[in-house]
Every structure is written in structure tokens, then in C-alpha cells.
Amino acid sequence: MAMATMQESPRSPEAKLGLRVEDLWDVQEAQLSPTEKLNACFESIPVSAFPLAPSNQEIEIKSDATLAEAVMKLARHNVFSAPVVDVDAPEDATWIDRYIGIVEFAGIVVWILHQSEPASPRSPSTPTSARAIAAAANGVSFALELEALGLGSAAATSGNFFEDLTSSELYKNTTVRDISGTFRWAPFLALERSNSFLTMLLLLSKYKMKSVPVLDLGSGTIDKIITQSAVIHMLAECAGLQWFESWGTKKLSEVGLPLVTPDQIIKVYEDEPVLQAFKVMRKKRVGAVPVIERDGKKAVGNINLRDVQFLLNAPEIYHDYRAITVKDFLTAVRSYLEKNKNAFPMVSEYVTCRKDCTIKELIQLLDQEKIHRVYVVDDDGDLQGLITLRDIISRLVHEPRGYFGDFFDGVLPLPANTRV
View (tube, rainbow, N blue to C red):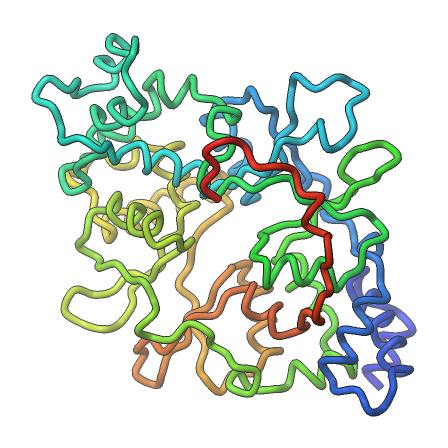
């Protein structure tokens, strides 16, 4: 009865899409496995059918925007990344000349943190304030500039550091173009409207893309941007459909989750300097880490690379701290958000599930909480694993042998000195 109701009056554009998959599912050959059926269904649907996201989700950042402007824009629109438009490209430029890459919120953080790790030891004559940086800017490397701000010593960092950083010439004058090709900068790998859902799902999972732009070749502009979160929301809206239930009712262990085991989880302790936590994430190439009690095994919170927005956009909340620990950071952010509920929509939360959870329950949890990862815990609350959006999508489809062929040959060459 619930199925019939959905078919007569779909709850959302995502549910309509789910019904389209359902129709294809019903005509697949009986000898195919459920995974093979899903592959065939998604290969038959073009990405142009994916529902449009809210208009404020599809933003672009100009290549001459400063890091400060980019951080504010990403935070204000509650997005993790955005395509970068080359301001020097002619008006009639093709998309391949118009876009120079994708900049991630986390990528800006990673770049800043890398500049804090100069090859040579701190010099006694190194400037020690943002004002000194401005005076010494001639011929001084970015590494030495951030070293001067105190980033080289995470343990000694105080709240005033963040105000010094956001008022420095380095932060205010460095542009998005300046960091192109570094670390988590991604080339502009886009799909055409005729490309399949299967291609998009594989790029978001096996190939680790956080978002995939879809181009309108006629106008040379972006038609839509499909994110991992949008795919999870689509799946959540498909609850009740046969194809989804046949997969979604499986236990995590039945589909090989969690992929990340307890000994593989990168952790930080609550009494560690918050800047050190961000450095750990940069070094280990992870987007978030659980915060663990110093004398126990239980997690008390979660900190994400994107949370640096609070350090960059609202440093005044740390005035009362001589040295900002991870615990201080979480406490200060929670207090700040209670007073400024609409100022910063992106917040990291520590959300858990049990090993006996089903895929469907996990998807609904992720979609409801608007988060990107869930920690698996046992009955005592101890960490047993970690599951991300990418992990779930990777269990929905698989890549057929030779599927992409020369697809990646069309990817733009990476800028010099790239470190993706």
C-alpha cells in the first residue's frame, strides 16, 4: 500500500527518480545479481535526470578572490567546495578554458597549514606578529610569514594568533589562483548531461571526488553540481522501493562496512592544541577526527577541517584562552553557536551507530543529521570503526572492467607543482 501511494504521489523529485530506477529494476534479467541489476539501472539513467539542488548550492568562486573571501563565501553558502572561474578567460571561452579547478574549504586550510612548516628552524630574527609580517613582506616566503605568526609551534598558539592571521597581508592578499594546484585542489573534471548515473556514482566513491559538476555544453556553463550528500539524500528518499529495500535492509557487515577499523582511525586527544589537530588531519590526509578523552577510550566530540571557519571568521571567541586545546575549541564553538545560530550553518557533530545497524538506517541518519561520517561504537561506547558517505556509495555500485576507457584522458592537465 505504501508503495502504491508513493507511485501515485511521489514525495519529492528524488522519489520520482527512485521510481525510474524501480521500473528499470523490474525488467532486468533474472540471472543478474542485485549489484549487477543496480549497475545496469544506473547506467541507463543520464545525470541530467538528477534533481537540481537549491540555487544557493551552485556557486562559483573567481580566481582573483582572496582566501578570506573564498572562506566566507563557502561558509555562507554552507558548501564544502566550488568551481573556480578564470577571470582572465574571454567571454566566449569554452568550459575547459573557463574553469581552472575546484577549490575545497579543506584545501584552503591544508594550504595554510603547510605554509607553517618551513624547512629550516625558526630564526631568532623571525618576525613575531602580523604587523611585522607586513613590514617584512618584501622577499619573505609564505612559510616564514606564517612561521612568524606562530603556526610553527602549535602548542604555544594563543587566541590572539587567529586575529593576527586574519588581519595579516598573507591572508588578505593571497588569492585562490595563488593556491591552484596545491594539495586538495582538484582539476575541473566534469560530466556532460548525457553521462550516466553509474559514471557519477563511481567518481563520487571509488575515485574520491566530493562533488561532480555537470555541464551544459551548449552554453559552456555548469548545469548542476552533484555532491555525495545529494546522493545520500536521494537514497534516503527511495526508502520503500523494492530495489532500495533489497540493498538497504542489509546489515553493515553484510556489505563489508565499516571499511575503516578501530586501529586505522586517526584520533586526537581533548587536551591537545586545536592547531595540532588540524595539522594531524593535514598530515594524515583525513577530513575529520574524533576527539578522545585523555584517560579513556571514549570519544567526546568530532573536529573537522572545515571547522577552521570558526578560527578564521570568528577569532574573537578565543580571547579568554592562553592556549586553545581541542576541548576549549569545542566548548567555545558550541557556546558561540548558541548565540549565533544562523551565523555558521556548518558544524561537526559526533554521531554514532551500532554494528547491527542496516544500510537504510545509516543513510537516514546521515541525511537527517546532514553529516558526512558516522562512528561505529560497541555497547560500551568504544570506537569500532568509521563510515563515510563515500563508503556507502561505494557499496551501491561497482566498476565494470575497462569501464572508463580513455575517459580520464580528457581531464585538464594539473598546474605545475600539483600535490593533489
